[in-house]
Each structure stands twice: as C-alpha cells, then as structure tokens.
Image (tube, rainbow, N blue to C red; front, side, top):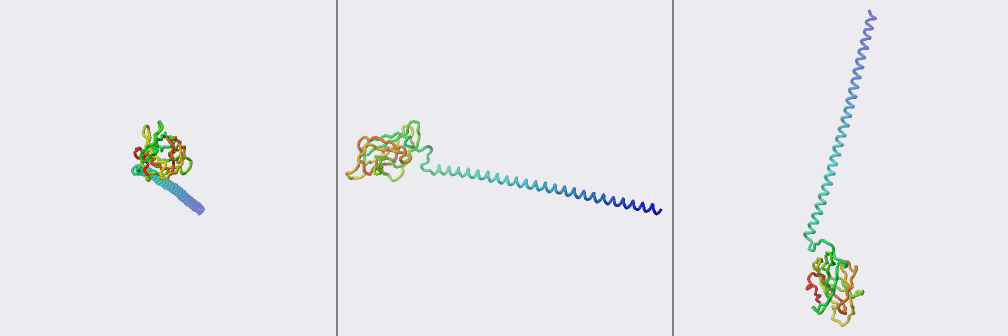
Length: 226
C-alpha cells in the first residue's frame, strides 16, 4: 500500500514538474516572440521614420532648388527688364566694324573747309555705329591722328540699306602756317586700328592738329566748328 502511494506521489510530482516546465517554455516562447515582434515593430517604425525624414529632406531640397531656380529666373527677368527700361541707348544687333562699311570722303567749304566722311553698310549688313569721335588719321605719325571736336557722345546710328552716317574732319585746327601735307585719310571703326581703310583725298591736305566730329545720322551735325 505504501509503495503504491509512493509511486502515485512520484507520478504527481513528475506531472507537476512537467506542467511547470511546459509553462516556463511557453512563457519563454511567448516572451521571445513578443521581443521579436517588438524588434520588428521597432525596426519597421525606424525605417518608416527614416524614410519619412528622407522624403521630407528630399522635399525640402526640391523646394529649395525650385525656389532658387525661380528666384534666379525672376532676377534675370527683372535685370533684363530694368536694362531695357533704363538703357538710354539700348540696341539689339552687332556693332559696326570697319569691314561692315563702305566709306567715301568729300570736301565741304563750310566752317573754313573740312572733309566729310560718309559711312554706309555693305549689302545685306545691318549694324550699329556708335556716336563717338570718328577714328581717323592722315598718316602713321601720332600727330596725324584726329582728336575729338565734340565733348559728348552722340546717338548711335543704325546702318542698313541706304542709311548713312557722317563725320566731319578738320585737318588743321591751328592758325599757324605750319603743317604736313598728306594725300590720303585713314579710317577705322570699332576697335582702334583694326582693319583700317585708306581713302584718297580729293586734294592735298595740310595737317596740323586735326580734329574729327562724332558719327551722326544727319550730315548737318557733322560740321567741325573750332
């Protein structure tokens, strides 16, 4: 009798121990799964947060780029509009070069006598001639180079087709009897000294401190007064 009780008691103890072991194992598995799920959730949340931050940063960067582009475009547009609005001598097109023009020279008796230069655009060319002192000389000597007869710059002349520009040249601005004789005049437009054109004068010029007017659209404005 006591052996059966002992065996029964042993079985009960083993059963209890097995139940406890199963409970502990189940708890451990549950805890592991919970931790695993928690880790997955944390990882997923972190990924979502990081992705959201990247999206936000990308959006902000895109916004800055767009804003910068728009601002720059707006600035350029404003600068262009201002230049057009305020430019007193605004023009579109190329500046005239010596090779763009045909020149002629004649003699005028007004104001004691002077040479009248005429410039005309070659066929098919449209260019703009600045209303500054005509770049002319009678020889290679610096003393033969004409100085300005006018103080201010004149309006730019658009040359195309039959339109002409005029400049007056006084070969002798002094009252002395001296001077050097020349039979030609050298004309250049644009950059000084680039591709000059030599024109034969209608007569021999006595040159002493020569002066030249600006280029003008009206020949009446090209009279070199002393």
